[in-house]
Length: 228
Image (cartoon, rainbow, N blue to C red; front, side):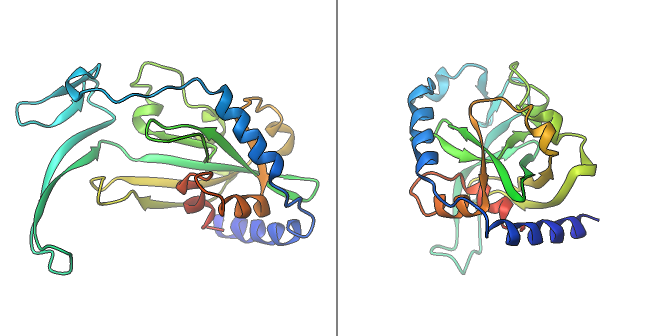
């Protein structure tokens, strides 16, 4: 079923690319404006000063909710193909995997993808990210905050899934963390209900051009769209 939907999307994109506006100047200007408006400020603090994070007797770092991730240790042996055959290091162990989704719609024969201008704690500036990015802990609202934007479009919405696959996050930093990557179709009229000013609809040509710009696209955007 999803295979047929993916083939149909590929055909639409081929037709769409002949009609698409490939200019990205306004998009880059919009990103600069979002950066100026964004009020998120991040500073480094000692680990023992983190609110809600604690050290176990064995030294592992964990969150009071028991969710999100813990910082644990691994010992590697017999890695004969690597620079050194054995070492030990800390690693992030996520209790649950994540869901990364991009919504797509067709607007007057132009295929568009919804990206989210979002900043993570380690980012220098805002990046264009997938429409929806959440771990199960975020979905459970273990942080005590709001639900992830677009949850109503992504969760429990199998009928509109065009394609999905599982990728594991970088194994040098995460312990066997799976991410479900999903492309979801949205009816054009329903898409107009998305009013968040940090979202932007872009065509495939624009996304490919933005990929050549330094520090603009979140890597997961490319991982998801590679399914196409």
